[in-house]
Image (cartoon, rainbow, N blue to C red):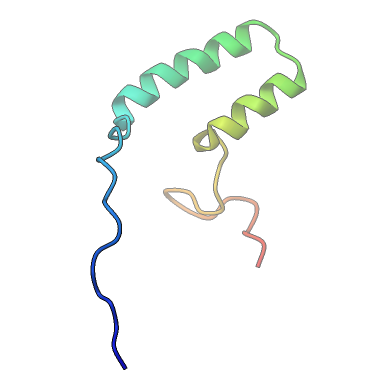
Length: 72
C-alpha cells in the first residue's frame, strides 16, 4: 500500500493577537457604565452580555461556589 504524503496545503498567516485583559477590561467597563446610564431595555442588555460573557458569574468564584452549579 502506498501513501502520498506530500503537503497539499499552506498555513494561514497568524491572526491578529487577542486584546489584553487590561485593555479589554478598561474599555468594556466603560461601555457597561454607559449602558447602565442610558436605561437600556432588556434586549440591549442581553445582547451586551452575550457579546461579553465575562460579566456573567460562573459556577465557581474566586473564594467559593456561587449559588448555582453547572448543568451536567
